[in-house]
Structure formats: C-alpha cells, structure tokens
Length: 190
Image 1 (cartoon, rainbow, N blue to C red):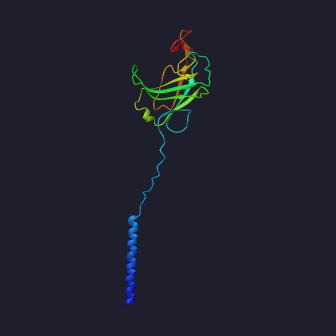
Image 2: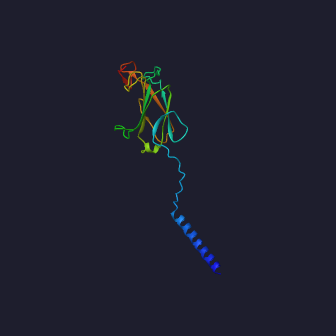
Image 3: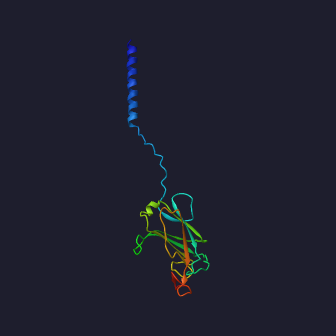
C-alpha cells in the first residue's frame, strides 16, 4: 500500500509539474500578430509622362502640328537632336487673373510629331476645382527655351478637365513678325 501511495503522490507531482511547465510556456510565448496581406503601395503622384499607356486613371494627349492656319508658319517642322517639348498644366480660374503651374514636364529625345503624352496618377489631387485648367505646349527645334521663328506653340491654351480621357492639342508654327499675313503670336528672333 505504501508503494501504491508513493506512486500516486509521485504521479500527482509529475502531473502538477507538467501543468505548471505548460502554463509557463503558454504565458511567456511571444505571439507575433499575423502580417496583413496588404497590396504594395503604388506611387500615385500626378505626373506627365511620354506615350499613352492602357492602364490606370489618365488623360491621354495627342500633340499635332496644325498647318491649316493662314496666320502661322506652315512649313514642315524639322526634328533635330536638340528638339524638345515643354508641357505645362496650369490653373487659371479667371480670364484676366493670374495662373498657377500645377505640373510641367520637358520631353527630350523627341523623334516625331504627332507626339503622345499623358497626365497620370491621382487626378483628384490635380483637378480640385471643376474648371479653370489649361494645357500649354511649346516645341523647340533647338536647345534652350527661347521662342524663335519656326518653333511650334499652342497659341491658345487648351482647356482640360479630369473628366477628359483624350485631348488633342494643336501647335502652330511661329512666324516672323512683319511677314506677309503675320497674325497672332510672332517673334523677331531667328
């Protein structure tokens, strides 16, 4: 009997020791919270990029040389190694008021006209108001940003809105002031 009682006491001690050890490990174990499976954040900063992509929220813009205006230089525009295009998106809420440049981009390595670009990213960050946004474009055949005879400009800024999906901008050749039929924007610089 004594041996049976001793075995029972020993079993109780082992059982209590195992329960205490289990409680200790459960209470001290570090539980790592599950890692949420979040999508990788995308850089959705508004920008002007070359070309037309087929994905995401964007406004696709096609820049063409309009040779139909009788008061512009309608010669063929010659693409050179220095040809670059300057694009500005600005906000001008009032006809005779000031304007604020929202985005601008200078494209180099221009190889042809028509030229394709797009405004992409979170358009809600750009178009906070309903109206008053315009695109302006200058095409230079030389390095630098001085407008000279033969450059192309969008003489009239093109209105643009977040609801637009495709926009066409016509650029006209800058002619020399004093030329026959000169009208609109002209320059004396050659």
